[in-house]
Length: 99
Image (tube, rainbow, N blue to C red; front, side, top):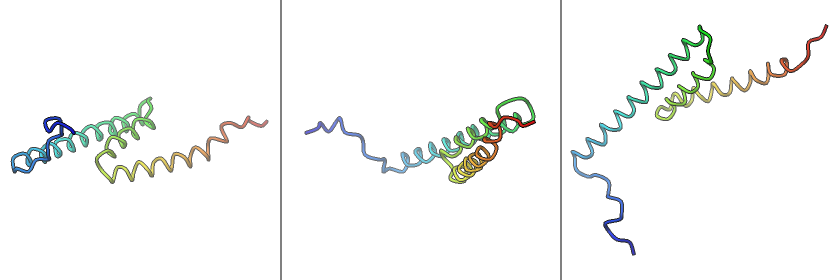
């Protein structure tokens, strides 16, 4: 038998605790949005400057996908197009040039 003091506390039922929990969730969602968008914007800058934009932009989408469904769908679409491009262009790069 377990000691009642060792059990996890029940979920909050009073109004103040529920409001605090809701505020925490909104703040977390906002922070994820800001970090994800910042990483994506950095990736867009890397498109025009030397850098790994193809790596950074999906990382930003993955950050956003942890909280937003639309970003998850966009990340799945990006992965699908990446696989298609890899199949299409990956073989040509491996073939030796013909003279």
